[in-house]
Image 1 (cartoon, rainbow, N blue to C red):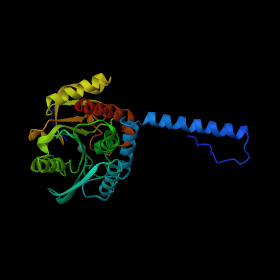
Image 2 (tube, helix red, strand yellow):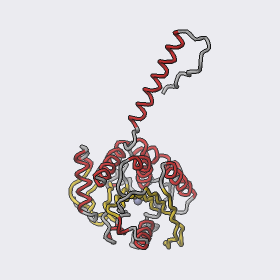
Image 3 (cartoon, rainbow, N blue to C red):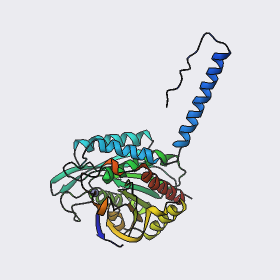
Image 4 (cartoon, protein in one colour):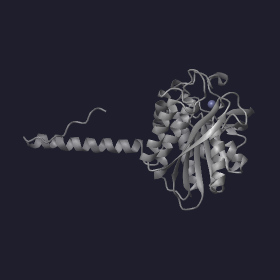
Length: 318
Ligand SMILES: [Zn+2]
């Protein structure tokens, strides 16, 4: 993205049948059974259906980062595409791998937007999007940018199917957000520009009632900006949800304008909001540097953003 202007267990005891029988054996068997039930209850409380786990989102981010630098067309991003598609399929999403040719300053590149869809009944669509490519740069593994958006979307892929819905839900993993050289209108946002045009042609665009784009949301010192290009009603919805969840201190007041993957949709009149923390390290000094590593992130930050996204989704489905 580019800134435009700123303002201000232990192992379960084996319960194999003991042919010797007797009260002692029977009691141990029952105790083991109760212990097992207790563990299952705890596990479901921690990762209940419809409940977002910041830890799981963080763990997905770690898996993406472990693949190394993930620029468009790289062997690492190809592996990541396989991981994303496998997880979406496992969670019951309808999949589309949108491959397209992008003309870049480094020549033509094949890119892939990965789209998951859950059907609803209202004829309207809610989209959660983010990019999963990393900037072409020596030694850059992109934990926050774009590991965090990748991890967030993968955890949303687990959570969203179990939530009540009226609308279709789309999860969009955009390729090619980063500029290959310097950020311009033509060298940036390759995936989201492609997708906005595609959805204009197939008429999906006019059905989108809200698009939530996430980028750089894992910083342990989490401060989500009030992005100034975003749709006012959605900015208000995000803020109200954050306040009601007690997360107000992580959401800055006073608009700052950022160009990110929401912009091609904003320009086509789609209600969209960008959730981004654009102060990463002292004076943003970890952004687009080899310093962007997992130790700068916190599962708690993923929890905050994930809880807010689940809450805004619930409010939009009432
Ligand atoms: Zn970036």
